[in-house]
Amino acid sequence: MEENCEHLDLMKPVEAHTNGCEECLKMGDRWVHLRLCLECGHVGCCDSSKNKHATKHFHATQHPIIKSFEPGEDWGWCYIDEVEFDPGDNAVFGAEVDNLPRRNYRQHQH
Image 1 (tube, rainbow, N blue to C red):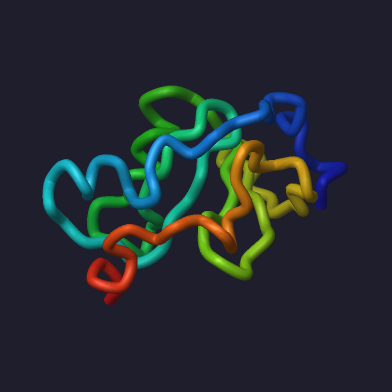
Image 2 (tube, rainbow, N blue to C red):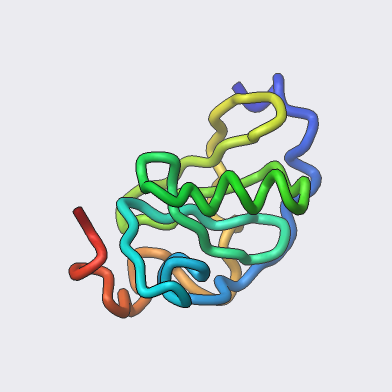
């Protein structure tokens, strides 16, 4: 699928800003799953979450490349081309998703 995405060159060495959805943490709200923007490091909640902050971040910033920010998951998504891709080992710099402390993670899961 990667060959159908023209935006993979937008991936940058990023470090996650938070260990949970940035906006949900500020609001005291919950999320289902997390997504990491591979252009700036924003952490937002998925579209199964009521607030859909990862998608809202894309619409606000036009940063199309995200990665799952869930332990054990290694996939990426381009919002513009609507294709899944393998982000590889270098998608998250400065931290391994599986080894991140998951502050408030359990209490935010549905």
